Structures are given as structure tokens and as C-alpha cells.
Image (cartoon, rainbow, N blue to C red; front, top):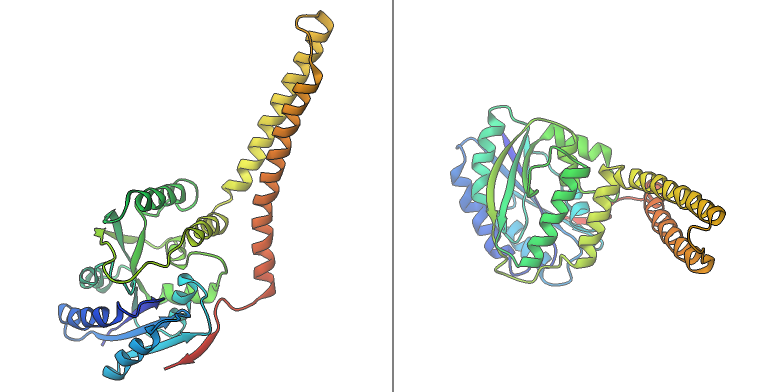
Length: 308
């Protein structure tokens, strides 16, 4: 009998869990009768009543529900990785606890897996969110697709079903400061793409802050692309060429008296331009170096407090 593991990171989802567990249990009837289920609920350091609600879910279905409590907030992607470490399913699905991604798509995704497709992606074609949220999300996924992961579908994805082989690869890699969901795409398996519209959040307040979004943006580029480093090299070459041409012009103008040369202003403009570029370049290089150092320290991506 195939086992399907739901991996669900939870962070300040006290109000969501009662609704989510009801939807998940009802959704089981849409699968073939021989499918078994397990729910890996990961509490990512919530300070509200999320853990209590998760334990109620476990008490109702002790044969299906496993609650993994992290010692603190390690971020949703590390919470997902923690869930992968405790999942035993033949196939696995990552689902948000707030149900913005529709669980009713998962039976259809499972059908593709049963036919031998190891990666099934539910692709966001639209989202019921504000203009600025859409703008940031669309810009992020456009940049990732353009400069990092060419095989990521337009609009990106969070809801994904994947084979245990892919799960084991991601757990083995155990990469720091990355997007574990997009790491599944990086493995380069063929996949099926199912479009959907992401719902707005009805219960609770999103903890996905601007700071976390910026970190995800930087982490994704550093993890999957050398474009920032290449951009530094190209920009340096362009600035060098411009400086050479400007120097030749200054010499020519000085010899011929074509135009009067005002040294102070020109020097300051060039100095400020080059200095700004150097600071940006050092910042980009520093991001890569810091992540290499962070990986070399071999600190865990998460710390388990208790498993229920």
C-alpha cells in the first residue's frame, strides 16, 4: 500500500490548524482506497497555541499524525527539511498550513506520481493578494527563472508532490541558506505542471515579512546562480573600458586644446562611481563567502526539541 506523507510547516497557525486538519481528513476520500497517509506537522518555534492545536490533531489521529517541535524559529524552508527527515512516505507533498494552496489538487498530483512521474508541481498562475505582494512574487520568480533555474515554471510554486527518491536526495544534500522546494527542481527530474490560483489568507496574519522575503531572494540567487559574480566581472570590464576611453579623450583634449579640462569635478565623479561599484561588489562577494563559511561550520539547519 503506497504511503503519502504530508509535510506541513507551521508558524503562528493556531487558528488555521482546526480548519486545515478537517480539510486534510476530508481530502483523503478523493484518493484511491489503498493509499495510506501520514501528516508530519512541524512547529517552527511558534509562540502562540499552534503546538497545542497540533497535539490535539495528533491525539485524534495517533496512527497518522507526527508532530515535530523545533527549539526555535529556523525558517519555513528549514522546517520543511526537518519534516523531510521524519517522513517515510513513498511520495511526499509540501503544503502550507494556511491552505492558500488548495489540497484538492493533491489527488490529481498523486495520479501522475502513480503513473511514474517523480515530481509534480502545482504552478501559481495567479494569486488573490495585494498588488505589492504580487509584484514582489512575480519579480522574484521572473529573476529566478531568467538567471538561476530555467526549468522553474512561470509564477513559481510552493505546492509540490515528489517521490521518496527526491526527498532522500534533498535530505542528503542538507544545504544551508537555500530554498528546499526549488532544490527539488534543481535535481532536474522531469515534472508535470498543474496551474492554479493561490487563495488569499482568510485566517491569521502572515509572518512572511519583507526581511524574510529579501533573505529568500538573496539566498536563492547565491544558491542557484553565479549571475551576481558574473555581473561584477562584466561591470568591471565595462567600467575599465569607459575609463580607458575617457583617459584617451583627456589626453587628446589636453594635447589639442579641444576643450578645457576641469580635473577636480571629473575625478570626483569617476572616484564616486568606482567606489560605489567596489562596495556593491564586495557585498555580493561577501554573501558568497559568508555562506561558504556557514556551510563549513557544519551547524545543523534546525534543532529538534521534541517529536510527538
